[in-house]
Figure 1: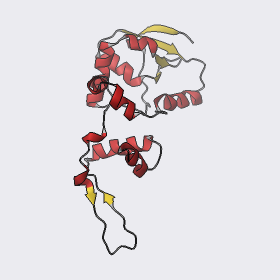
Figure 2 (figure 1 turned 45 degrees about the vertical axis):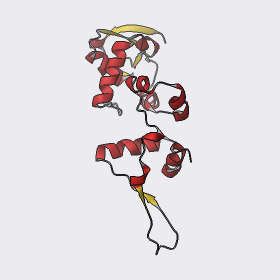
Figure 3 (figure 1 turned 30 degrees about the vertical axis):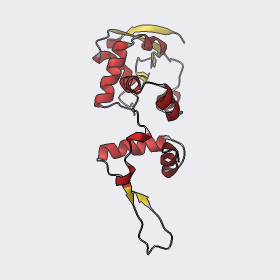
Figure 4 (figure 1 turned 180 degrees about the vertical axis):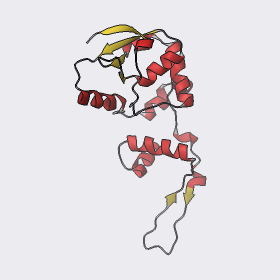
Length: 178
């Protein structure tokens, strides 16, 4: 399969795309395309034989918002409908994890954030307000950390924790480097 250039008006967004980017993150994607349009050549939009997006739905929308008239695409014409569905999911799954220690020590935080990475390092945490001691009458001492979020933020936190390996407690333990 080779990369070709197609007119944006000929490409159809996938109405069944299960991923989306909201508000500020979408704006960052639009800006990243304006700042580095060469990225699209390295990661073209993948479409099926009907020009429906299989990979890059949000990039297509961001390209439209950025005012582009043409974009690089790859036609995946030889995929079965089942393989197309599998591709849509696998293209959007984050298989890896960030090495936050390397990012904190070897990368510029402002640049990372401007490129769309949500940066969250340990020094941003005020743990004193999150600890609650257990009831001493309990058989086994259990201490809890209570975090309060808006529903939207809560869903983002749970989604992020679910994308990482280990229990939620172990993930937080690792983030705190304890």
